[in-house]
Image (cartoon, rainbow, N blue to C red; front, side, top):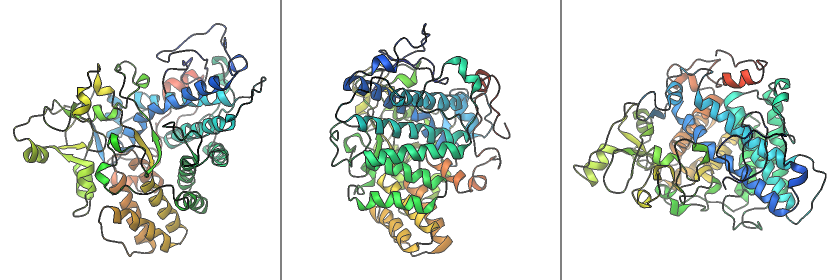
Length: 496
């Protein structure tokens, strides 16, 4: 879902429609093709929707930060100046000049702009079967992008159903996050009311398009982050009672390309390995760059391809798993143990950005993927990013029930996740049960981008993240360049 709509400005919400998306455009006059002379038929709506989906590719930054900012992973890479922003975040030294934080803001606001382009009022009022589904998907995507921004930055400018020119940006202010959350909830509630379950959807054969389950999963998560426990329970129970989802029998196969879109899939971001790419524009890629980036540096051996040694699991994560939990090896590839058992004498390189002895075994380039003959094939993995899995839904439901005082359902959902991997059932109640649920989230979901935000929202970040400062590091800084572009009228987050 790439390159159907060009970006006029990523942050300033100026957008036009054309072919390609690899660079900024200066349009004169600014809206040469606007909503009134573009949206004339179903095909044009679908092209615009494809453009709105396109920015989901930017999730790689959020995904990395979600573990690198926590106790799960280090940044790794070639050196501490290679993707320097990730190293700053690892050591909690990041400030308002940080390219990774800027990318989070740019990518998500560009996605919002594309959604607004679809949703803004139009004079032509073209009608066709399925139009309401396209609008519902656009609302889901807008909610997703705003949720990413709120998680990172707290209060952010809220703009809906309209595009803004550069001259208007200085008039924008940061909207209180409660109001942003209210808009996110409204968009997702509309999506839930309109979209069908995957098994019923008329476009179920089109991979990657969201459905009612995805909207309910994200809505429940949004409620969970706000501690709206009963509402979260309601959303998650609709997913569970639908019987459309289940746990994959073998945990170690969940992240394989050949096992995509299985019964555990609630919301995936689709990628393609059919096209090469360039390091000069990572957001332009068709493929999922993380498996190659997280591959074994200078490795030449069986099963795995070589890579750039990013996002490396820590010893602390490895040690946190219970005895004989198969998720440990499925998550953390102990490279020396693997070589000793499977390919004695095989060598690999160690990057100056840090080395833990472990590699991210969930999203890692396979040797088969390295043999497709495409240029820069470390940027072209077709492996999907699993945004919401059914196991995550069960654990979020368990947490919401636990916080609502319903230990019976909470422990049942917790044990359903544990049973899949052969771990003994829990019998805890009260706060002990709550702590067991949070521990299970780490074991089940490590190296999937959730850990930092789980620690922050549960108030546990300062206990486990080295150099984490309470009152500061719960949020990331607003990029200084964006404050400057807004005329300096956006206040910075506390402590930065």
